Length: 203
Ligand code: VGL
Ligand code: ZN
Image 1 (cartoon, rainbow, N blue to C red):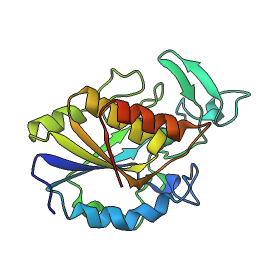
Image 2 (image 1 turned 90 degrees about the vertical axis):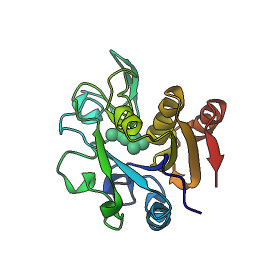
Image 3 (image 1 turned 180 degrees about the vertical axis):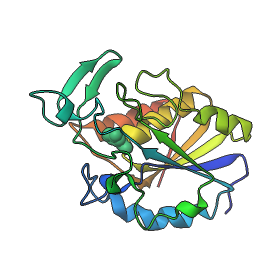
């Protein structure tokens, strides 16, 4: 069944570095690509996000002497997990998965391009204040509801879903078309937080 025009499909970070063989591989990240392509046909509006970091991004463990990936540091905006270098602007790992149907995208929103601040959410950077511009885009197109899919359930997908609810958008998460990193129970915590925020979990 086609979705109404006021509903958009938001495909989060379906990039090579988040797929098996990539720098920050999410288990089974690649298996969702074909069904996500198929789902695009049901929507009038398709929006992709792309994690897009400078090579010296402050979320990279390589920028913090004596720190290893997955350690947590305190940033001016709060705690930040340190990651392996990933999705460096212009690198092959930052490209979308080679099978993703990017031609269907009306809009590609890049995030995480400021060195000093990470951006999990498609809407706000990790200070929860600096806007990516997506909210204005959606509102000026009359979009009121989002179906979300992509990587990773417990980081960029969760942050995007919670921000979208906070802004008043309807949010449905296709859990079958998302995959998680799952650090110390972060997947279960993310699902609970999203459910409590009124995100409809489907799939
Ligand atoms: C993501 C960690 C770092 C994600 C992006 O797409 O979930 N996770 N950068
Ligand atoms: Zn990132």
